[in-house]
Image (tube, rainbow, N blue to C red; front, side, top):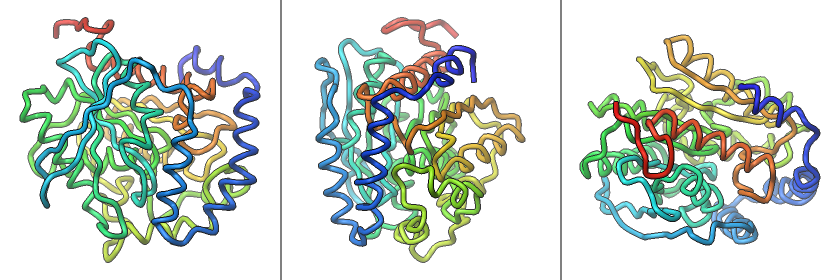
Length: 325
């Protein structure tokens, strides 16, 4: 973690983060612990997303479709003001593979578009349990293949995602490699869920400090996506994948969340094969706190750090200005 981020995150948590943690701990986590139907979880996320304030006024959203393995895959193109046309972010939303959509995650994608000066493509990939693994990865690959077919250089494409979407970035990297596609220019993962076998110690060690996710339900939730597959299949749990010359990666997670060890172990695995990894561990924040957009200072700092990383890796010096390679 660089000096600037360490200085910010070593300060006491903001008052807003303190209040959000209380709200999550006493209202959201108990609600999620009781939900057994994916349909109810989807409605809960949609209501929560609608309450997040502060979307950029200049943000624009365009609905589209791209060819997929089983028909068309809906996607949303997000831009904010004048966007650099040669470089792009492919964002894979979170939601435990059960819920979420491009619309529920605009608090992340619109700000990434604004901060990076790039367009963001967000696939509305198929959800479990109706579509278990590897449906989400296949739809992500369809989106990536579309960008390549449109003429984007793979070095000018960033994968990004949070929670399940963060894990999906690495599953997509593995599937793309297996099918002969080139690697993207870089990957950004917020609180990535990369081990659906849940072998990390933080699942139990942080069961009480985790503000949002009920640790006692994680195996049940994972089973919806795993279906008849193997929890340690790399396309389901990319922690177990074999990586060869991975692109530069930025990973951030909270020291207090139950998926802390997913982030740490993934960083270690990528570094072991020569990967360039920036691992940014943040105290006190809830899982995937970037979802709160500019409501939280900690979220703003994290999104700014991610945007800086993407711009640096894809050769951007400012909006609309690219360095020659």
